[in-house]
Amino acid sequence: MTRPTRTAVHALPVLLTAALAVAGPLAAASPAAADTALPRISSAPPQGGGCVKPSKRRPVDVPWAQQYIAPSRAWETTRGAGATVAVVDTGVDARHSPALAGRVTPVPDSSGTDCIGHGTFVAGLIAAAPRPGTGFAGVAPEARIIAVRATTADGTATANSVAAGIDAAVARRARVIDVPIALTRSSPALASAVRNAVRRGALVIAPAYASNRSLAGSGNSPAPAAYPAALPDVLAVAALGPGGVPDQKLAPRTAPDLAAPGTAVMSIGPGGTGSFTGDGAELATAFVAGTAALAVAAHPELTPAQLTDRLIATAYHIPAGRALVGAGTVDPAAAVTAPLAAVPSAPPSPGPAALRMPPPEEHHGRTTAIAVTAAAGTAVLVTGFIVFTFPRARRRGWRPGTPGSG
Image 1 (tube, rainbow, N blue to C red):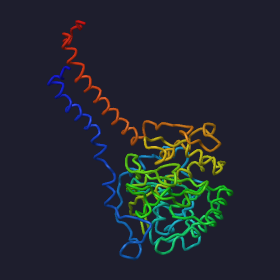
Image 2 (image 1 turned 90 degrees about the vertical axis):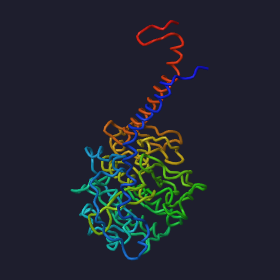
Image 3 (image 1 turned 60 degrees about the vertical axis):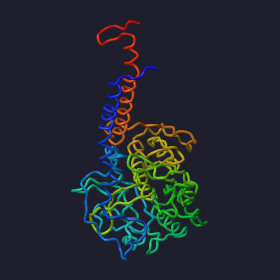
Image 4 (image 1 turned 90 degrees about the horizontal axis):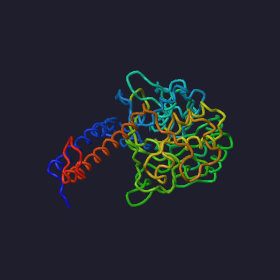
């Protein structure tokens, strides 16, 4: 066996270094570290008691999640005007949230306040309008929000309180109902509320698992079933971290239909114009709900089943398996612009989604990842050529600029 030449061996680290130089900026720009300086929002009250204090920070950059799914590619067609999304959560601060000004209807009026901040954060991800001085905007910045509080003062929700919230949203004719809550059990009232919502033309969206560590999956056990996501006709959502990496290692008990950003995401909160950060599949539901609002605004004739088909069929496929991410990452532009005839009218089969739409070139987050992979692959191929081909060629008498001797 011929050993590679010293020159070829020395070329290996040089080429690998070049490949890493291409990938380096992507890794260095990891948004997870950048967002940790923001105050956090969770589904529980602050540990010190009281309500969440307003944030004084407003990053000017476009958040990673917004870059990743690129809702702005759909805004030439629609920004969600005419669509109504209900947020069944901790309420929405309708008075002190300029990015949602004039587009929040509290049901009842007490739902227009939000001590915990979770509902306001979710509403911002769905429908916050762009504001000067920050790159953040919601997926459907002209959609309307129906705020429905389904939790107690400490953020606790029950199956029956969520059921009442869904019923209230249906009564207000919401076309999309985001329930960013994962419960360990259902109830007859909750199952009935979901069925009624579908009959009345509303799509219910919920997390496939909870962000709470006692309820989320660990390294050795999958996340338990979550409700209402585990009920029929509810769109179950999984969370992704920066770069499209699933936040779960094992498939959750409730199979996700779609995935969306859910780690180190940024949004507004109660009390003013500042920004907050948060994590969890509960927050990932907001990106799907905002996308659904865009699709409804563009295609108001869609039934809940057709809307579900459209969201799943136009999802951007990622390497993680369906058990972790469902059909893939929600894609707002594709959900809005895909020809109606190309989307199946029946529920999709367990196989790959019927419609695969690659991202356009301006979708920088994904094209950068593809470029990095291609560069690394090219480096490996070139290195292999140097290591194995040159020594053999030289054994045969080949020199640059001369034909081989055969």
